[in-house]
View 1 (cartoon, protein in one colour):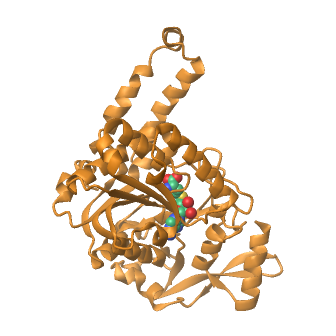
View 2: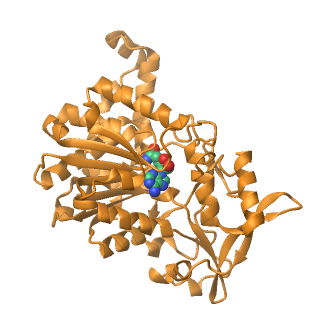
View 3: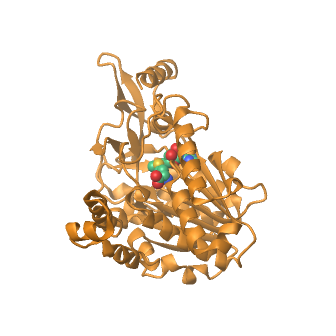
Length: 410
Ligand SMILES: C[S@@+](CC[C@H](N)C(=O)[O-])C[C@H]1O[C@@H](n2cnc3c(N)ncnc32)[C@H](O)[C@@H]1O
């Protein structure tokens, strides 16, 4: 991590201040020292032992609910002999594991059509990746998943079939990890925040300057954000990479769906005057931090997703909006509440339960606490407030049929 600070400092000394997007790209994805590459130490950043948990950590019921949705997509596509699921930003592969488990138990015919490709930006061959791949391979072998039906790729380019996929591209909390530019309003102008160095203090500091490109300067106007009426000093993140990512995704879908889960909102609700300092956040050891320039490579950096950008960019490239909803409504439409209720059978008094089943009291407590943790996924102030975006190509009318979009939309 210190090494990454030295690398970034040398770059700034040589070339001058860099955009925050460049700083964030190295902090998260530097090939040797980036946070998502293992911080140079093979360290697992995500999960209970890492810096923050994601929905899949809470309970397999989350991934199994997504499996139900993917299965219905296969149905809507006319049950093709091969159904590809590509998951960019797959991280540890929890979703792949839970999708396979559900498919083998509940839809063996679908399982024979299913091919699952995990695609992460973090390179393969690193200690972090090897540990993830080995763990997932063991779990999938235990489930009886045919070895050839799951593979890992680096980035989307390697993951997508050259003639486009029939199936679904699914991601959870990827778009919030894409590098962002930061702009700040001053009078009728937008200034961009660059990262420079205070040599006396020996630390990275913000330096305002002109927008680094016409795309950055025009971004808020592209989504009709009335920023000129906002107070001076108002800030926003501009994620050009999310648009490039969506263009790549759209080009990769021949017939099927794109399912994107993340926190964020439409531009109108995201770029409001009361969010004066934007949404950029740093996370370390399950704590929120407000020093994004500190310790590059050792903390997560993340910003809310502008879903309007994903929807409009997708539309420009032929992806139609099937629906945008909240995770709480999406999961409810997929029978998540009934799934939780079914886990309720473990809610018997500890001692009686232990005597009747032979389970230890720790097993019992673990189940009860897992069940309670699931409510976080339905809480609008928690992970239930995440957005779920579904886009489609070549499946007209799917928006009215998809189970995850049954509840009223966001
Ligand atoms: C916040 S983590 C989420 C991991 C996982 N989806 C989960 O729910 O636990 C974001 C992941 O996205 C990956 N990532 C970021 N940009 C990517 C890209 N352009 N293509 C593929 N993966 C990417 C990161 O390396 C990281 O593993």
